[in-house]
Length: 356
Image 1 (cartoon, rainbow, N blue to C red):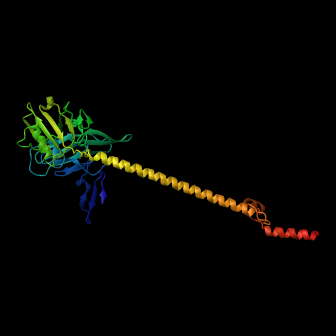
Image 2 (image 1 turned 90 degrees about the vertical axis):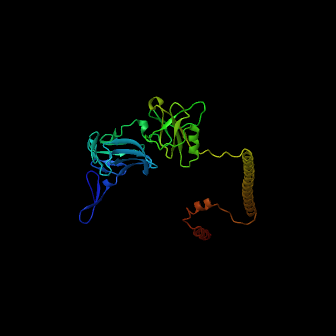
Image 3 (image 1 turned 45 degrees about the horizontal axis):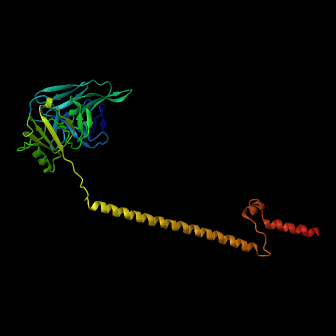
């Protein structure tokens, strides 16, 4: 096993013949010198922080380089057609210093790129952008070029799923407001097949509601709203605000959302009141039991203290009892219990006897 200077990990058999290399299995990144063959995909991660497979990929087909979003079915958002379809997978793309060279069966093409200052790689981002990164000694990795020349709002996940892109800014869809209507169009260039037999807006909405796989209904029309085209979307990416002066049509998107079931107006208040009443009763009972518990402990401690004091008073009243000493007094008299009191008393008795 060997890793080349360009970053290709190659596995050899016992005869030294390459049997596997990482360049044949691209993930979301291409490095200088790497080739993307026809049918292979560079698939973006799901998010910047989540490295699972996302919904955006680029691939080389028999007539050029293309970018797609989604899988059911894939929706093309970037085409770079080099030649007419050749009908085979002999096409490929080389990532070289200064450009992407695309080869088909009948024609070639080049996408110019900035030359590498030191180390360079190309990565497909989760939002659909294909960016070139270059190493800077002072700043680290820097994005220096967008390969797919599209408007920022034309990338399929630039604002995430269900997000709305308008003049490069992302917002969230608002709830239905009868006083103002905003029209949106799907970012993806190729829409799914038009639903035959539906040319009215209300019928388009109902068709989406009756279709479990439909996530949104897109209705496009020209001058008359009663004569338009209905598209049912099974996958929903970013949306962008429609500009009728540029697109020459009007577009309305209806996103399917789940409305939570409202509680019954009769049962909900009574259930809440009953629950609140039980909670108050339990709290009161708990407080009373806690008070009894604390009071019992205090009474037991007071009685025990009183019994000890009475026992000491009775002991002091017995005639002929020796003097009682405290622990501290004994500790001081025995030099921290290092001397025996019995031996000193015996010496004292002998001294007194001999004096007589």
